[in-house]
Image (cartoon, rainbow, N blue to C red; front, side, top):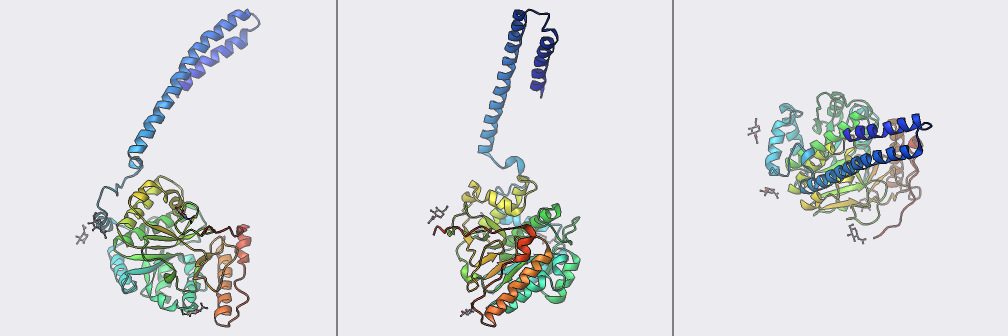
Length: 393
Ligand SMILES: *[C@@H]1O[C@H](CO)[C@@H](O)[C@H](O)[C@H]1NC(C)=O
Ligand SMILES: *[C@@H]1O[C@H](CO)[C@@H](O)[C@H](O)[C@H]1NC(C)=O
Ligand SMILES: *[C@@H]1O[C@H](CO)[C@@H](O)[C@H](O)[C@H]1NC(C)=O
Ligand SMILES: *[C@@H]1O[C@H](CO)[C@@H](O)[C@H](O)[C@H]1NC(C)=O
């Protein structure tokens, strides 16, 4: 700033005096004056350039030594993770003691017998209304092939009181009220509204807590229709498996070229995933205003993730499909995610079609028709799915 002021000061007299008196002064005199001024300016410019270079060097070296230190209040890497976990759960004021006891009971009941695994989903008041997303979600488990037995493992995170009471009404002993003081999560949330972002980050925080409690989880967005059991298509010895956003290039370990979709992920509880979830959650401070899914895509290749040894894997879009895709194989799809859609009414209509088409295929034995295009959703955001790209593997 100071440098700029000096620069301005040294330029403006030249311009003024030159401009104001050019007719009365001999040319030589003007040139000499300009020369003097240029010497001055040159000196200031070199000082400026030097300062910039120096600060770049300093910045580079500090960021190499400790890239995260300035932005990170929680030094999760320095604290043994499981100790940190217990402290955090005790310090979490957002889960009240009563809810905590309730949560512990529900998680215990829901966890798959031998694997400590729960299926987690989340809703607010808007999705909990009768004949809306929640009802279709549950219905899909009832009419899917081999999915009915998965219902008992579902845990529903309710973001407001109305969602919670509807959940208790139709799906008792599966409902957890996840309070967030000072935030109203009850309305229909458009993508990227501040409250929507808070909702997404609240979810990431909670899922990290689950890992610390020792639960593996499969998180599914609720606007997903479960038609087959996806567990047999997932891999046992991987820490973090996640669905693709838009398309899958055929290489399960190619995190670089496959974008992740936070709406469906299977995560095992261990030190690596606990550290990763802390890192992910903390990274929101480095990318303010960003959605957790975007941040995941920014950080998934970070050296830190490599360092903790997190094993990641993509989930094939054949198994966990979405409305973002151009087409689907009804003989293989496990889960259909109703994303790439704006407006709850559009989503509900098109997900209803998925349920109808499935019934037509599975119950009535019509093998020809497959799934209709989600026309209401396509129209809602003028989304045209990309052509099916070539698979690499
Ligand atoms: C957490 O709180 C409970 C009850 O208040 C207490 O028994 C327990 O020791 C605390 N745990 C830690 C790690 O501080
Ligand atoms: C349904 O599941 C059974 C048992 O896994 C399997 O044999 C059958 O092929 C499945 N049907 C469809 C349409 O996927
Ligand atoms: C798959 O992706 C990984 C990670 O980017 C890469 O190392 C590997 O060579 C790829 N495999 C194939 C068959 O392209
Ligand atoms: C996690 O890390 C802690 C401390 O580094 C260690 O004591 C513990 O055995 C680890 N747990 C697992 C499941 O690897």
